[in-house]
Length: 257
Image (cartoon, rainbow, N blue to C red; front, side, top):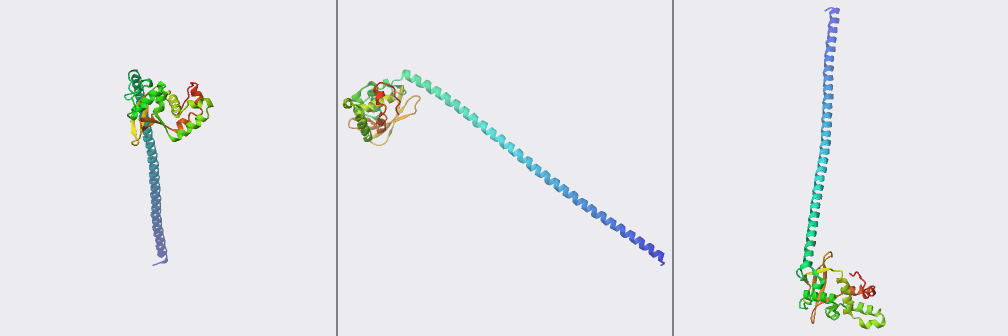
C-alpha cells in the first residue's frame, strides 16, 4: 500500500467515525427531546388533574350551598306552616272560649265567669276551691276564713302586717281576712276561669289546676282539714300585701302575684 491510499483510507475512517458520532448525537438528542416532551405531558396531566380537583371542589361547595339553601327554605316553610297552624288554633281556641263564656256555667266543663262559681261544699279539693272562689267573689268573709289555712310563715307575716296597722284597726284583721283580700285582688285579674284537674301530692295535700284566658295556667295548693278541703295560703302571698294594703282598702286595682 502506498502512502496516498493510507491517507485516503484514514480520511474515510474519520468521516465514517464522524458520521456515526453525528448519528449517535442525533439519537441522544431525540431521546432528550422525547424526555422533555414526556415531562411536559406529565406536567400537563398533573395540571389538568389539579385543575379538575379544583373544579370538583368548587362544584362540591356550590352543591353544598345549594343543599343548605334548600334545607333553610324547607325549615322556613315548616316554621311558616307551624305559625299559621298555631295562629289558626289560637283563633279557634279564642272562638271556643268566647262561646263557652256565653253558654257555660260549669267551671269543670269549660271557661266560665267567676260569678258562676258556686258554693259546692268542701268534700273534694276542686269543690273546695270552687267554693273558695265563690266566697271571695261574693264577699263572704267568714266563709273565706274557714276555707283557707295559713302556713306557719304566713302566720308570721300576718302578725307583722297587723302590727303595722293603726291601733284602732288591728282588731278588725285576721289571717283569713288578709288572705281574702289577697285573693280578691288576684282573682279580679281573671275575667273567667276553668278548673282543669287535680294533682295529688299525698293523702292530705292536692294541687288544683286553673286555666284562664290570656294567662299562664295556675296551681292552687289544697289541704284536707277537719271540715274539708281548704286553700293553702303561703307567707309569700301575705307578704305581697305589705306595701299594697292601703291601695286595696281604698278600692284601687293592684297587680298581685
